[in-house]
Image (cartoon, rainbow, N blue to C red):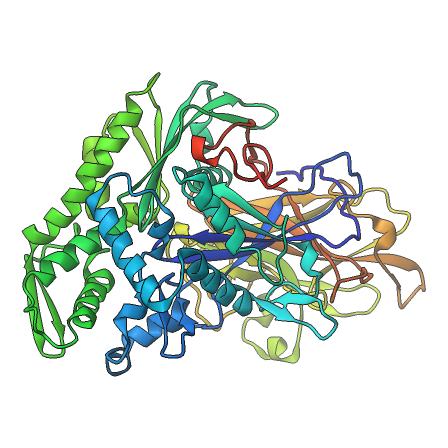
Length: 619
């Protein structure tokens, strides 16, 4: 496995990308950097994602709820703070439910002559009138809460991202918001307007189609390379979220130099998500609860939350015949058949739309499914049965457990290691100049994460100070380095950071040898590192100058394989940065970049905004 050649990064500040998946039920934020290159005739390096944003609650969800609640003073609350507040029965009982906005994103969706959508929109509009707000004002309040939580203002007027990226100018930020196709241009304009507020200005906000974003994510991170073998392959993408379901078809136009796709037909977005199922369950519960029950709206909300938290995600793989709900001495029971009817109503609507798109033009070869709706085992079983002639590529399905990963290294022999009973059997290497002893070990990177769709990403070292080091003479010609990655069918203890190799090749504290070994070969010159900018040090025994390269191995584990990167640190501190620049250089042989030819994402997104090929932005 060899590194791919990439452009050398410049010392200019890099663009910081904040992507916001504003879904009907929950949101997801991720931050990344588009590192700039010195040769401006080449496009910028791809965005490298960091960990998802979890706002200020360590115990909260990575996908905070998007619902909003206004208090008596008119101040809004959302995300994990609001979710935790509703878990307190005594506190939430006092909430004014007329100031609680769930599924407010549907205010920006066409009603499509659907009575169910109009009923939700009418109820939300009535609540807005009570508060004296508009749908734009509500969205602006939500965006303000998000910006306040992720942006930290520095003393010099610049910004940093909470627990992520250091000091930068606010003009170096781009906000990318996913939106469903099928909206009116006015609705997209208002979404765009809402995200333009301090510290983000005009020209820094971009909209992208939800199903296209999901398709890109699948191609670049979770797809099987065998799914892209023939030009003309057709892929129908179905993004089933909490509120809406979006459908779009793509055709594979080329294989080289990178995958190229063309959208075939107009996208469609309709209201048929996981929240639609909860709406129907709440209706059935409401029909069994007396009208004169005190605080009835709150009681129904609590019953609904019980269904969402305890029953919805496992319905279809359990064998229960009755489902019991209890709030404040009130008990309600739904049969399995009653809940199945709620699921079936949405499934019938979903399949009708999917069948309609499948009948257009030439046959589709792949169904690419993602979103919370398809996380339901009941929905998945129905899809597998109805569409059994297609290859189904599912992003939401929980996948097999991943194995543990470790990277080999040398560790200096300490007194505690010398006193250990395994010392005599360790593989020891001695420094010929300083006399130091080093033993061969492996450093755990991933200790068997639960599911592949956790998208586990980790680096061997996190900072300039702790980075791995490579030393080389200034006159050396061959700078080829290698790293060995080991895979174990073993779950190490929580407190175990290292494992040691014995002289006979076995690994201590592990049952057996690694099931797989990968050697990653790389050369710093070939991946764009300017050797003249590296730290200079001297050999303490011969006073000869040599260069020091500080780096880490970064990896991302998925079901179809593991991607690796080299992450290096510069020796100097460029202007407008708080710390040293991290250059993240990927070297995965199967790394794929999907390009979409310029086109309308859908008829109603034609006046939207560009973010690279296939998308549009404000001019």
